[in-house]
Image 1 (cartoon, rainbow, N blue to C red):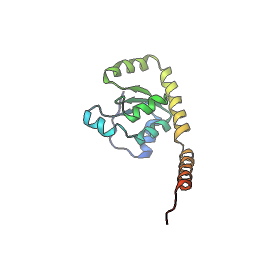
Image 2 (spheres, rainbow, N blue to C red):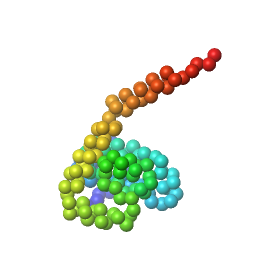
Image 3 (tube, helix red, strand yellow):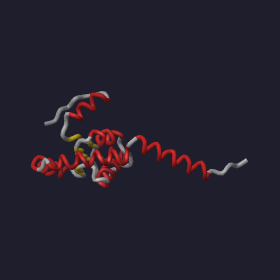
Image 4 (tube, one colour):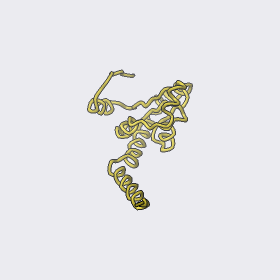
Length: 137
């Protein structure tokens, strides 16, 4: 079943994720919205990964979010709405997929989105830029 909760704060969202088997990441399929968001990476994806829950991503297959989750094998992805019912039936008949993708989501989040890793990579980038910069006087 689905519960629409309206607006929630970060703490409430964390609790909702804890109480869920599957978290949903969706993006619009309207042409205008697809063009606006095709290169963006939603910060909500990191929240979903951190939840350690199975992610069902329903979004245009050429969007950056879809491509990332698909390449990382971190979510069950639906890139065409005509595939949604089949995917939902598959999930209901094979709950092992939910457990498998819960683990994959957590592993992707841990591997790629820990704050320590992000800081280290950022510092390396700053060092690289600072060493390659020429001072003109």
